[in-house]
Length: 497
Image (cartoon, rainbow, N blue to C red):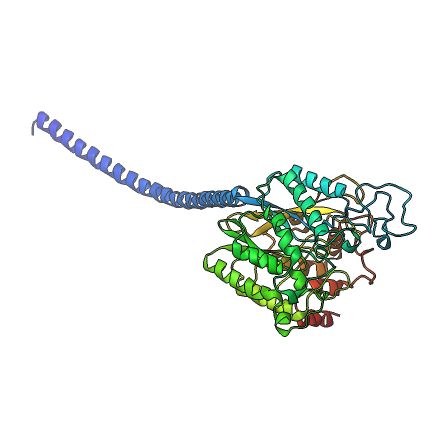
């Protein structure tokens, strides 16, 4: 073989060897690469797992943010309505600034001896009803707090206790006092604001007086109707008839809400004169039948309802005695339970105390009975009014803010917000208020705070005065909140002793 051929053959063989080395090296690289790929795969899996965790965390953050935003929008941007709630003004045109603060003097210097105090007080005293100056300062304060309320809830007793001492012929003298209060409300809040006003036991010719035997012959109701209509121009004719016959009516305050105003003086255990007719006893003035029929129609039309009255069913806060005969309480509970879906609030007064009453858990009534304090300081309570806050979509009660003044002073201020005072932030439903009552059974500090806020007068806290009876024990007081009907109340008291 020639040198050239040998050289060529050698080059080919070297090239082949080089190629083999290349491929061997390539295989080695692949093996190494495979090793690297396994590491990378393991690392990739870890990385993928970490990425998945971060994705979950990121999704959780986003979801939490969305939930928080939705809650924020729901809580803070939902449409909240505001209503002014006043009660138990007990306007006394005979109040004297130097009247002795004793009820036997009636705070009016009428044919009484030794009724002159050593000092002068313009804005009312404990033991006395409200002078006009006190009512004016209350309305002035309310105007500064809520200039344009959606409407006004007035749960009765515009007129002083023992109105028979006021000179003048009935019913003219009472109508004149109603007109004075109506003029004041108009001057502060305008002529267009709706005033849903109930009759109190002191708003009639005699205390707790309503003659049920006269059917529709009620001169006071007939003559005072135009005064009430100033605040309710849209009062329907059918309810005008109910007003002049029995002192009860309904009024539409929006396209989705009607206020039913009851004359609960008819149901008082102190009703005067005593009712003897069997039909009247079962349903005085046919109010229960009207109440049922009105609610039935409103439920059919998907209209929500607030109920306004003066004397609430259940047991009062002083002697723990029933305010209605049990037969009437049971009837009221059955009607409200029947229409529980649309009954969103129940407001009453009479007790001059900030308190409430509950429906039994099995009734499924969502709204408790909320009882307001008074402007009159006669029972040692500080003068007060409140602003009710409600959801304008559901008409559920969300909260209320109480404003008050020290007795005898013109120093109105915010006293407390109910939700923050008692740690209730889910609205003032029957369920939430029952939780509050349960907490008070086990928390003496909370119970003490509740008792303090009942009269809201730290100088004469409830029940230091306002009753001749000894204060109720804790158990009876809480049983009176928890149970409206006699059997349930008595069982609660006996079982928890």
